[in-house]
Length: 181
Image 1 (cartoon, rainbow, N blue to C red):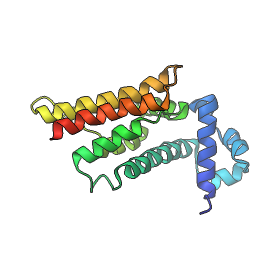
Image 2: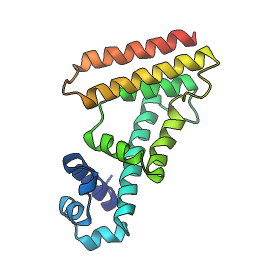
Image 3: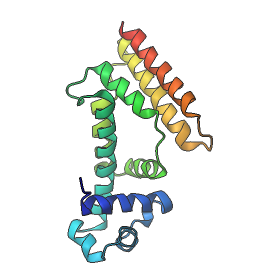
Image 4: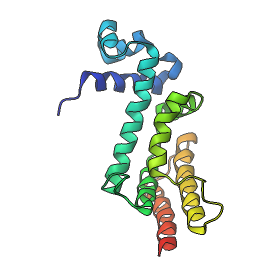
């Protein structure tokens, strides 16, 4: 399947964020990276804010696709345990600098945060209910461990050996499976 021009532009914009940060996303920088004219960019995005919002959505959609692939089904079709297991498996992959920068930047903008929050709400247990129910607390702790693995590799210069990363993720998933029996 051929990649759409819009997707090519969003991938190029993501590379700009990866290399230079969110503030460097301009029509000029993205057009140059994508190999399109500024007019071609304006055809798809009316403003810089529309472009940045679309980058957030593009990466969140990619994240959700990874979660669906890991679960083998949509969040609506998966049990809470299957959703958390998929979330844990996807956390084995370290994030890119662009994802981290966009998530951080997005946390200060409700429209940007909503894109990421929607995926998280479908796939990861929240702290709500963790106070009164042991199983809910255990699921939340597993989520925190998965988030910690993801952040560890994303924020430190050390790259875990893929076997060690997989072993850590498997142990997190085993903890979840033990509690569900």
